[in-house]
Image (cartoon, rainbow, N blue to C red):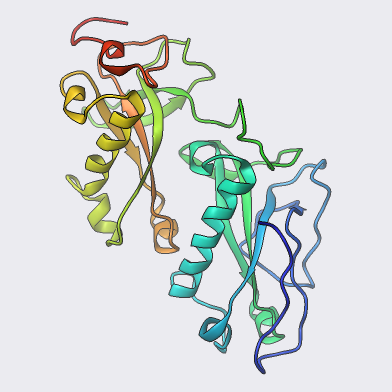
Amino acid sequence: MTGCVGGSTGDTGQSTFAPQGGACHRFDVQEGDRHSYAPVSCAEAHEAETVHVGAFVGADAEQDTVPARQGPALRKAFDACDAAATDYAGGEWRGARLLLRVVIPTGRGWAAGERWFRCDLSEITYVEVTDPRPRQGSLRDVLKGTSDLTFNCLNVTELPDGNLGGLIELDSCAVTHDAEYAGVWRAPETAFADVAAEGGPAGDGCWDVVARYVGVPRDALEGRADVVWRLPFEQDWLAGDRGVRCFLWIPDRTLTRSLRNSGTKGLPAPGRPD
């Protein structure tokens, strides 16, 4: 799903520049043009890798200025990038320490006729820290098979006031833990405030994701497990990201194995450790 696209359409300009799919970039950016384009070898330290290049077309390409970050044109671009990133990495990118960005032309590039967008994947340090960190080596097919980027088992921290704190990622489910990544719930079209509100739809959606992950009817989880979820940041939601990460959580108990496809027998009974 990588490749190069042509430049402008209509009479908005004459530039034929477009970035290349599969290229790596020393720094993570949100916009660029031919003057700042300086890809490096993926064997070198870099912060971003282009997994797909697309083009704004039709009315989106005929705008006088670069499409708004939170507008419909960028939403369509994000949807294309979302699918391309999973295909390129060889697995759902949200299931790993990865960040997806849609990079668009600068105002100068747009005025010159550039109508491309590129989809960049970056490695991040933790699920809750989305600053890219330098890596060496391509992300192509990185999630096929075993990968140290994939979310595994975790521990949920609780604050003194009883609210949940952060998620502490672990290298292996053989380490004592109380939580496990279960998958992604695709949220419907709704306002961010609604999906983020207490009692909003994210928890309900993640219950279904966790039940499928364990391999049990949803009501079999009651009293034996709970769920934790992490929404995209609001700016990412407004840009089109509707993927909510869902985690199985076993409060007040510990495990030393994965519960994936474990069925009812794999769930610890209330009050009994693994």
